[in-house]
Image (cartoon, rainbow, N blue to C red; front, side, top):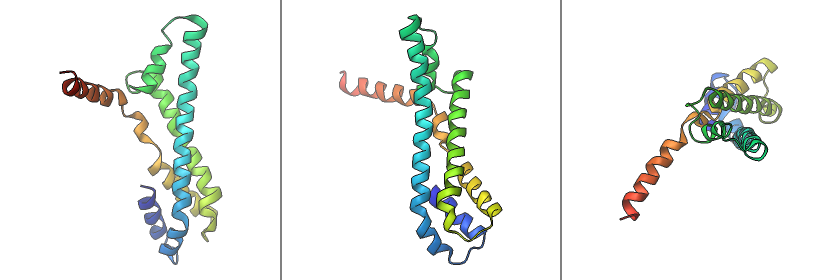
Length: 152
């Protein structure tokens, strides 16, 4: 996705030698995207562990564990889990925007406003929206298939 968006942006801004600059920048843009995905994962992991620690180690009450479970497996089932996932996506998008302006788009001869537009387009198009897909449904399907194949 990073490659398609970057190539489209370079052509849209009518940059000279767009393909050469694309080849020069694509690894940095991709690396920034991967690092920003890890930022989102770290935010979710920290919040999830914090809720679990607060619930399990301090109170021995399982009510806060539900939020941690919903963040990890069913983010659209709870409003709080959904908002936490949207917050992680926003943090990842902001880091993509900031790092692209500071590192990957510095080699292009553009005005600052055009660099901001390009970084914003990359940030909006490449944030990890997959965080909102309920992974628990996939685990249920694979577990059911596992039981059908190997339990007999």
